[in-house]
Each structure stands twice: as C-alpha cells, then as structure tokens.
Image (cartoon, rainbow, N blue to C red; front, side, top):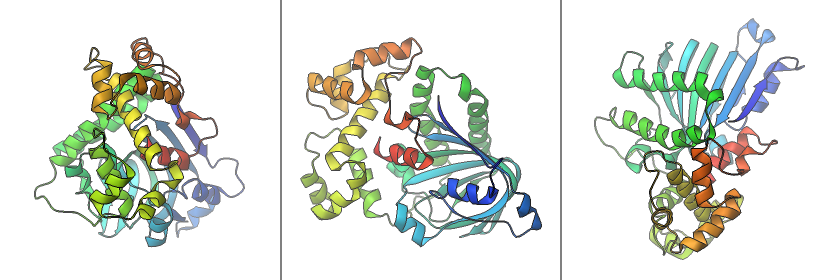
Length: 336
C-alpha cells in the first residue's frame, strides 16, 4: 500500500508546516485561541488507485477554499469526511456543526469554509469522474451532510472506519479490487440521499471535458476534434485543459488503461476475456492494447491478472514514486 505520512512534530513552525502540507487543498489560518501556540497536526494518506484514504488529527484551525484557490488549481474532486472526535463547524456556504459520527460531503470545485477543534477525522478523496454523472453533477456548490443516525450515514461511516485499520494489511489485489468497489458503494449511498434531481452548480470547462471523455472512452472516434465539436469548445481551450498531464490523447489513453486495469483486477469477473475488456475501454486492437498496457504498467494484461490473483501488485505506478506529494497524487487521480 502506497502511503504518505506527515507530522508537525519537531518542526520549528508547526502550523506553518501544516499549512504548507495542505496548501494544495485549503488556505489554512491558525485558530483564534491561545492554544494555537501549541499546535500539533498529523496526516496519513493511502493511495487506492482511484481514491485516497486520509486520516487527519489537528489541534485546530480555520480552512477555506475561495475563488482564487479554485482558479489556481482547478481540483475536480469530492471529499467525504467522517468526524471521529472533536469538532468541525462548517461556516460557508451554510452554517452547520458536525458531531462525531456525522459525514460531510464537500466539492473541491466550490467555495467553502470550516473551522476545527481537536478534530480527528477520516477522509475519502476521489475524482468526480469516479462517480456516475447522475450523482457527480448533483454535488452541491454548498455541501451535503449525512447525519450519524441516518441509514446512509451509518453505512458510509462504517465503510471508512473499516478501511482505516485494514489499510496496512491489504494485499495488492485486494487494494485494486476495492479501488473499483468503494466508489460504486459510495455512489449508491449518495444516490439514495437525493430526493429531487437538480442540475447542480454550473461546471467548468475542465469538468465538462473530463466527464465527456469518461462517458465516451469506448468510442473509437474519441479525438480532440470530436471532443471540441461535441462540447462546442475551441481546440486551444481543449489543449490548455490537459497540458499538465501530457495532452488530450495522453489523458484519454491513461484513462482507458486505468479502466482496463480495474476491470482486469475485478474479482467478480475473473474469467472475462482480455479482448472484451480492451474493446469496452475503447481499444480496437487487443495486440495494440497489450503493448500500451505493458508500456504503462510494466507487465502484460495477462500477467497483471495473474499477479493480482497471487496477491502481488501488477507492475509499477507513477503515483507510487518515493518523492510523490499530496499534490502529485491528487493530479494522478484525475489523469489516471
């Protein structure tokens, strides 16, 4: 299991170090209380391939995502946070106070603010593309709270609390299986909490493009030209959105390969034909797919399936580099 661990212990400026560690997500401000002089924070992050599982413990602080931050990073992730102990006060856009056991669902593409007091929490961070469009597009610009006594709140909390102690004991095959199953379970829980469909907040060009690509990976005519035509954007707008991940074609290829890897490692369909998986992911030729798969993951699709059955990880992953940062991992979630 790939992991990142950060602590403010033994740092000269504990809150400054904490602020730097979370800069990719939030603008952090020290708590107003004198206790801020004795700030302590710890963060552990585990990479499941399609989502991150995090546990944070911090003395306190104030956190926000504003328009300047949104324009700077264009993060397109959903954060599901379960408060275990302490307090979280959501200040914007709606004032709510979470009790231990409550679940907050935040959209990193929207503005919000909150404050914490001696908070110990679990967080699941996943890219918007990992959720069906019917769910992802309904993530409010505000927030959603699943209260600890609600049926779906109990299920989501139980899922996070079960993952946390198991994370260091999971075999690679189990990790990859969960990387596909957990987003599906989460989507089911979120769908049941939506009583009236609504269009949700207007999406950015980047969000529209990623959703369109995700829903059309199977098409053999998915090219920069057809994407720009279908969404009514210019080629320069399209290329600009993907320049940080190697370009549009590279992004499409990575998403197709990641989808294929997830399907190959799905324990529910161990005998599904590799050619069928390749075709469903948008590859017209199985031999060409196998060559690209080996280039990306270091082994063939057949070897990947066998390694998962044996409890081994199916080849290297760019997101597992020793010098990876939280920012690198968030970007890798989007690009696949």
